[in-house]
Image 1 (cartoon, rainbow, N blue to C red):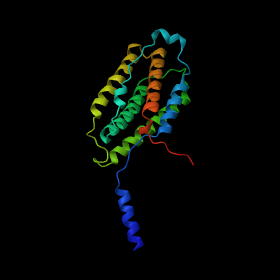
Image 2 (cartoon, rainbow, N blue to C red):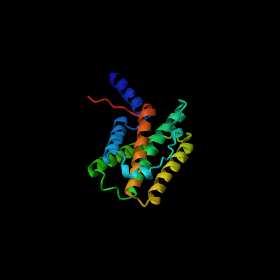
Image 3 (spheres, rainbow, N blue to C red):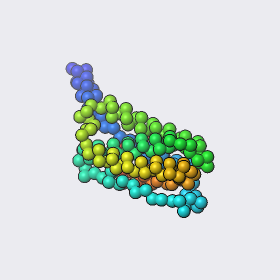
Image 4 (cartoon, rainbow, N blue to C red):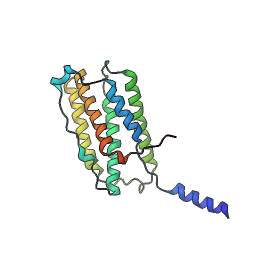
Length: 188
């Protein structure tokens, strides 16, 4: 009798929906690594500095499951797009290569893990009929502007510094305003 109770309990537990979340500690580590990779914003780049408006609306939620899912997907899309921008060109030699390798590995691991989780979830577990298309459009526009800036400035050192500053600001925004959407594992 006890065997059947345990068996039924385990089959119910395994069939429960899986929650796909990004690791808050890894996002914080990514933020700190990117911030530390090149140090303070260089004085020589101040005249070239531009502000690219960050689409904070992509991370707003009224608390419904659909909107919360949309925010999680927006965080994922931000990390995925961020990694693509940094893959696009030769990074400045003044940036710490090991720090950037660590940063890119952590971001890749997050993107890969979240992608696998959402792909293995049943369609009902990750509601793909969210309001994500508006969020995705806003994020695409933001990252297109970042890519255009790099191209317009011929992937110069200052262009990369502006991009790094923007990406650090983006990760900081997620940590400050949407940390509730992240998983914060406890260390033993």
